[in-house]
Amino acid sequence: MRGLGTPRGTQRNHAGESERAAEVGDRPGIPTRVRTMKMIGQAAEGEPGGQAGAGVNGAISIPPAFTVREVSVHYGMHQALKSVSLEIPCHEITALIGPSGCGKSTFLRVLNRMNEVVPHTRTTGSVRLNGTEIYDPRVDVVELRKQVGMVFQKPNPFPMTIFDNVASGPRVHGIRKHSDLESLVERSLRAAALWNEVKDWLGKSAFALSGGQQQRLCIARALAVEPQVLLMDEPCSALDPISTFRIEELMNEFKRRYTIVLVTHNMYQASRVSQRTGFFLAGELVEIGPTEQLFEAPRDPRTDGYVRGRFG
Amino acid sequence: MNRDSVALEPHSAALLMRVAHPSRWWKEWGFQILALLAVLLAIVVLLALILDVLRDGMTRLNIRFLTSFPSRHAEEAGIKSALVGSVYLMLLTGLISGPVGVGAAIYLEEYAPLNRITRVLELNIANLAGVPSVVYGLLGLELFVRAMRLERSLLAGALTMSLLILPVIIIASREALRAVPMSIRHGALALGFTRWQVISRNVLPLALPGILTGLILGFSRAIGETAPLIAMGALTFIAFLPENPLSPFTVLPIQSFNWISRPQEAFHTNAAAAIVVLLGLLLVLNALAIWLRNRLQQHREG
Image 1 (cartoon, helix red, strand yellow):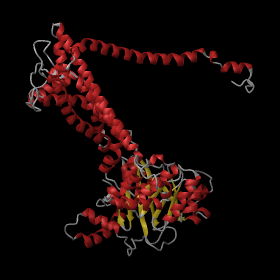
Image 2 (tube, rainbow over the protein chains, first blue to last red):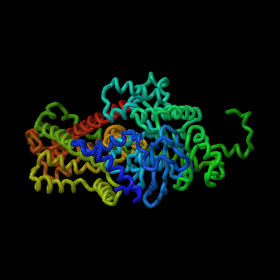
Image 3 (cartoon, each protein chain N blue to C red):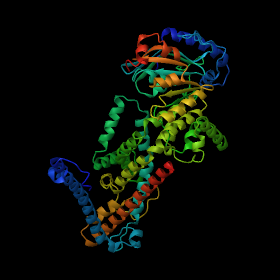
Image 4 (cartoon, chains in turn orange, green):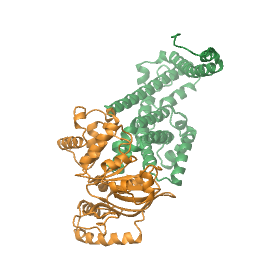
């Protein structure tokens, strides 16, 4: 259904795949789905991940969380992403900036396969998470999305209680015991710096919260599934400056435990919180590098024009 | 009014007055009055109908009327078999059309690919909602009574009624599902929910009030329909209760239709009384459904 990769990319995957498949594949009674899940689960620390160790701009010492090679996305006839290649390092905040419609949000949704939700979308190229090709047909998309959580532009709490919002993910993934759920909900709400504000109101509707609280609730909901990566799609664009500040503080804390990819319209935000920044324009990745370098000394004249506010 | 603070030119002050714009005033009020008249007309006609039926029927309305079988003598005739038949028919129709209708709506709204076949299906369902009910009766006669050899049974009647109200249920349920914001579905999918988990845990609870409204509309239509059952030949004189889904049956609208077509005045009174019972049954069913809907809504928001 989905064309995977250019010939080059595909070949590389298949080589890596068959080796690992041979490792775990001969065990009888383990369905393919489970095996693939395991493959994503293993943090593949020893594996250099092909040429992934060396970044496009500057060297990365630890293996990247995501290795993206020549990814293109088409919506019907319209090409939204044009052969994007980049690495996303572990435990860092990677910011993606660019004008509206440049493809940065599309790129974010490539990373947890949420782009498949939109009809008539075609994704080609190779995306590896810890060395595993996530567009491999054997990959269980449910397991992928458990490991790659997402926070949306507009807070989208479920129409249920605060507790149930946070507990719904873990419940779906098999946690039934109420005491387990309670401690997980508390932990997640604390991590999202919301616990003190809502601890006496857990049975109240999530809609009773303010916009900034709702967004932190959505972050807590994503954390409750215990992902490795957090994708944030303009998480502060609907929020006031104080709520924005609190969420930026959270992101700074999170990078010790999670890999964060942040799409933002706000260049100040990108420069405040991120370690690396990529600039998208008209579906292309123009430039990616250390945040300071991208804002102070961009290599591409288009980046220069954008970060200096000449257009966009 | 604070006259001191109003410092407008004389002519612009005059322009602010309503009398300076009679046509605008008339358009605004004229439309409101027209709308009010439309509502009053509907209510007056309904009230007149109910009062007329009540006046005619109240004299016959008593426990014996409810608990007697039909008879050749108007004073002894009752609606026991028709009332029980109506309730059974409703239950069976609900059991058949509810799951099928809601299931079809879920498929079309949540799973169906956006292609030509889906569009043809949607168009046809919308058209089916406008087909006269007699046509469904004839279809029921051919398909259920003759081809499937169900005879003139409760089951054949319920299947025919289900066909009749399925389009209404499907269309209303789809509207309810479509009203659930996409962001809820995306939020759940991003947490690693499967398609079915998204639907059963997030979408259906939100759409349930709207779906219930569709079901109420459909059932209300089915309980009052006479034509399809007459077309498929449901019996009019039944002096026993249906024992199982394959028993012959009659319903309230058919019973009143039968009584009205008799020459004797006393049977007309019986028909009016039967209609009062039918209206009452309808009211009770609707009230029950609305109560259920409100309860579900409160539960969700609480």
